[in-house]
Length: 57
Image 1: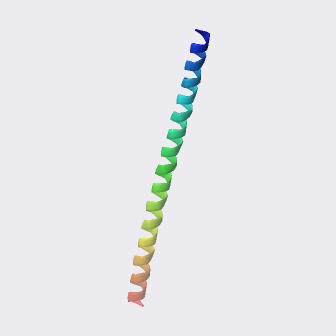
Image 2 (image 1 turned 120 degrees about the vertical axis):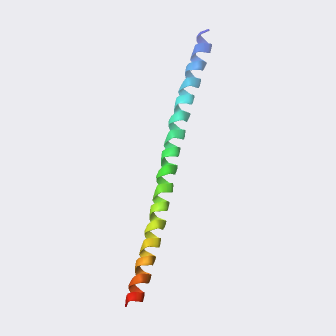
Image 3 (image 1 turned 90 degrees about the horizontal axis):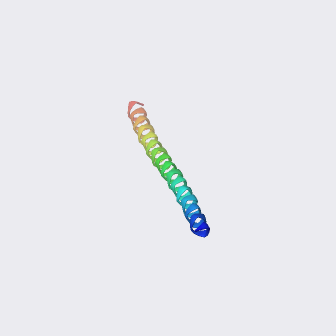
């Protein structure tokens, strides 16, 4: 009985760790995706502005 409860506690701890790990990975993934989209958007905007500047000049 005691060993069973101990194993369930260990399994619960592992589950909690996995949940936190997955949560951190999802947050990191979202952050990376947002950063990539923002960087690409900035690149596009800078390219458009440079193109407009070149045409105006």
